[in-house]
Length: 336
Image (cartoon, rainbow, N blue to C red):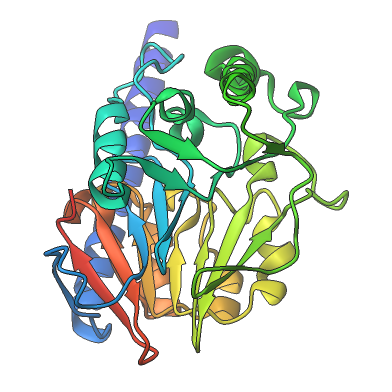
């Protein structure tokens, strides 16, 4: 009798799991079909690095499901996050590191006539390996000179035990700070929240200081978003903002309308909520992930609620968004 009950429980569990997976697949398919029917697609062309579209650009590198974004404006360069590193503390992870690809791309795009890269600043949006994993290697590279580093002070007591023990946040943070100190690079830990000029861009850090109203559940709650503006066009790089952390609800109104959104938390569950997108109203959404790994409900909100054109950096092998002097955003792909 007991064996029969266990067998029945396994059968029921199998059917429940199968039903959930089938529902997810159907929803994902429906979203893609509706997306193709109803959403106007932003044009994207291949990048030729001719500079014909202008020199005010946001480079979204292809680092699979991790963030590495190079900002370029009027001859200045800055790096927001560094992509997945090569020494991931989660030994069982399926993700490869992108150290060489990131450093090679920065050198290709930002080197001066002497082969030296000058970064006006680097920003670690938060201490997760898929965002800050390559910073130590970048800092130690002799051909890359960094003027200053924006890095929040890491507090292991305010994050999940899993974050600290299994993901090595604290050790990574210590290594980054040590590398910066060895090269006498100023470390700014009181992150400014005021707008500042960067070339032809206006830049503002959002969640520069995590407010008391935000219940810090994990390190994602400390994510620093970046709003970038030129003329009438705005972009928001959402780091790992999600509705679950409370960051989307807290900051939506202050972020306001944007034309381009770097999707928060790689399009995983809890990002790009309906309420958040109804405030931001992005026309273009860039996801630093494989298109198939974006959660179906996130795709639904982006395509059916915001009616945004969604682009994957992994699917497109990197994307550049160029902000022209004619108040346009031109997208190019295959940059790596």
